[in-house]
Length: 541
Image 1 (tube, rainbow, N blue to C red):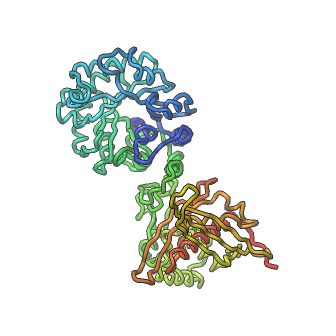
Image 2 (cartoon, one colour):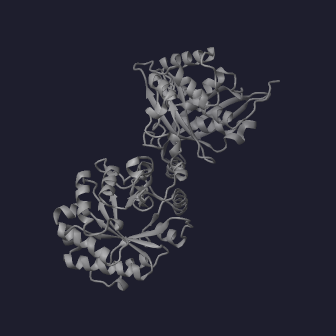
Image 3 (cartoon, rainbow, N blue to C red):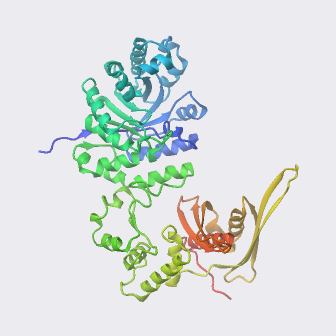
């Protein structure tokens, strides 16, 4: 008879601790969208922020998200020293919020009690007790984040344990041990959590780790092995400094690795797990950040290879080269096309594109030779899958001739504006002939630099195709100088996005002229979008 599995609870702090990430600033609408994604994924607790601390969080708690699974949680501080819980406005705003649970941060290091709070250890412990009781009296689930717990334990284990035990004995559902500065190692985590579990049952212990030594995920698993049954972290590892424990890595490991899958169960089901990559990308889209291509499980490169020998073997026995099936987390295998590629790479990529050809088809050889010849001049298709697809489809005669660029011009001018300030202005003009139309189209646009101006001019008017590209925008642009000297070869990689669908794609251009290389990549981007949208070219008169 199989022993019942222990339940692990997932606590997401993307919207609170994740909001401490440099460059991250969630709007109320962002928080609602992310809450929906997390709830749909199967997260148990969603920490929405700190009501009363700022206008965004306060508004978010007024407009409580509709959750079908997760417990909506507010973050705050234990009551201020020298005040009762009823006479602490900040504390009351958190406790009286729309949240169903309240997570309060408490000092667990006697050094901070003395220096930061300026009170006695006994006063701090009493404040923890009264705060937990007040949260429970408000009919809310109580959680205590023991800040700097591991540093506090190493400095004064008796005091740190007293804080944890006091929270539990007064009714805290979860006592969360925090590695706040991210400096604790897995061996220390295991030892200390085991010691705490002798005072507070593991069924009431949580772990919250930061990634300052690149061990937040490992520390989390060490804590689980030692007894913790709640895991706190953030989607994509967001968080201040180096980030929080990455739930995007933790969740699939819990479900797909036998050490954990055989012992524990979580709220994320295998069916929900297939949405993980999508959830990760949605967060990046909301933050307008390029996804981390090397991210475990969900990154574009997580299941990618470009070596011909490995590619051939992967196609025959993928389970021996991949630690899990990419489809289980909503990702896919990528056998990259590059100058190191063999026929297996080409065939695999063609199959993914729906262009299956026999292994001995001469067109496979021609395409492979063309890729290697072009890469010898500077092209790189492993990072520009959209340009490769166009190249392959053109070889097979499957790319309509939508339009031709007759000419383009870019002017960069430094001048005084209307108020006398010196500014730099880029202006681009593009002449395009649409297949089947008697007259060419002229478009002129200004931009932040010559490439942006060219992009705007090219997309300003494409006649009958304009509605296909109205939501396309340039989101990233990378330049690499491949050779030195006055005739240097420049490679440009452009990332485009369709704002209506969130789809991203990469195109490449190569030329001794950086503007010409950029424009080649931009034209490829537009053609790719038209092909994927199913646009039809008119027959020339």
